[in-house]
Image (cartoon, rainbow, N blue to C red; front, top):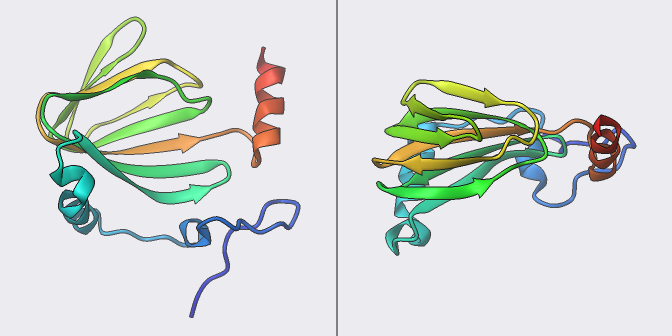
Length: 147
């Protein structure tokens, strides 16, 4: 039996990859990491591989696997995020500090904080992204109201 996909408050259904927005999503992270390690993007040496696990209009969860001595360059997301280290160790560079995040720890960043992520050793982590409002238009309206 399949479960219905997420519906926007307007009643419109999420049409792109609706299985990523089911009412209940459950994952075996060890198995997901095993699959990521088997993907071509990991095998060919790009430095990282990722998989979106949940994708609601206002909330995403992404599993990321990074090879030793790689980095995600400085960027920001117009959202609040958390970074939960599952394996290895991360260095998260913020505008005014560097935070070490070993396996088992989680950090949360407020809205739109620029950051980069370094993996001094092979590392796996979950990024959770939470936007205000449910649609792109609502998020942009919220962002304008904050300035």
